[in-house]
Length: 236
Image (tube, rainbow, N blue to C red; front, side, top):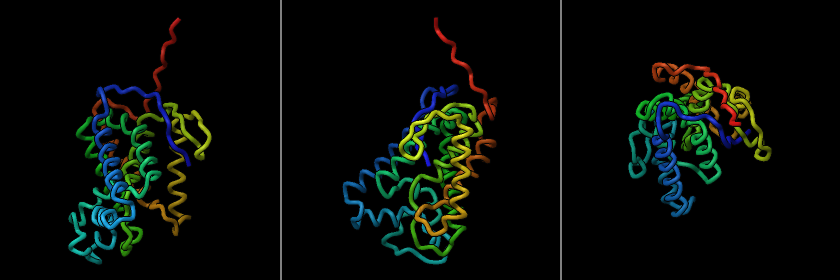
């Protein structure tokens, strides 16, 4: 629908979004390892199966082969979010994280932000699994966590103007409440109507719901929701 490009939204409580940067580095590093080994190599397939969230395994319907079971099934609700199926998949998720996560990290603090991120990822996996518990297909990608950042950012900074690349072609400056509300509604729409697609819309929706709830519960004291934009004084 769109790719976020830039937002002018300064940090207030932290100097730099270190946790966001580390998470992005981990995601990019994992993709580089898989790319160097060949995205369709046996090694990459083992990573996808071992790190990926497989609903039928997570819901104890089936068992993964012992040589592929890198982590306990419950832990794959987090590890799946560090694996991506291709560069476009990775780049899209990392763009969302870089643009929106810094202000969410600012509102939560570094440690609580890390917990927030992992919980959003887990909520995305759980929601995806609930839709089809018998599925043997591994879920991968940081979309659940990124979706949680979107809903949290919307509640924190609905009036901030963000630049987006609409339909992959058109750069537009939009207030975040407009761009992000449309994006969220699109995820719910696709969850209902794209039941046979390759995108795990349930994971997106699970992350959205988790992000909206958790930001209210976990934000710093004194951080207000629906913050107003502070005008930047013009120099003469």
